[in-house]
Length: 204
Image (cartoon, rainbow, N blue to C red; front, side, top):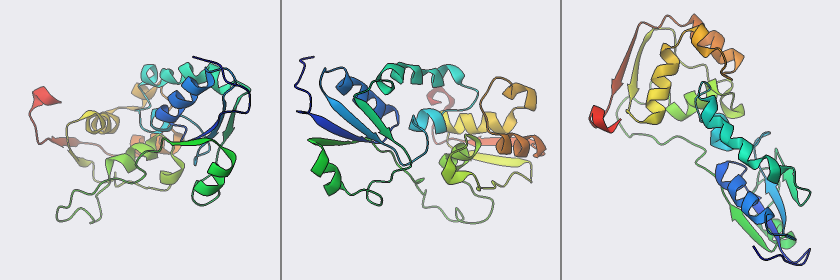
């Protein structure tokens, strides 16, 4: 990396998830570059924090890669800031030479099938955010009372959801699952979980 004159390159990175943190880390390695990292949520790391299952601590440990960058005096972090509401793109460009948008999808995708808006349905992304303590889903109140669950899909997130539904209280030891989710899951009379996948088991 070739050093630049201090003040000659100031970059705004919008989104403090893995992509945003990687971008900030690479930029801050260039001597003289200044980076402002903006995040809508009160904490960094995005999907690593709010999307990875709470019992997968080894996967979440990737955030340690960003410790040095986040501790650098040329990197400033601004949390609880929503671009487009609190600050406009034009305002960012007025104070930075470049803006990098590293934001993820904030809403779940609908399947477009009959009945998916009826009571008892819960999008996986919302459910994952709920048990990980995402501020947007703290009041989700997922339908756990029946004890009978169907998980649509057989990818990583679907299997995480099924496993979280099936685990007992002691199996969460060492995880960082939030208290309200742990209490609700422990109280749920889980009896049966069905995984419905479009593809075969070799593609799980």
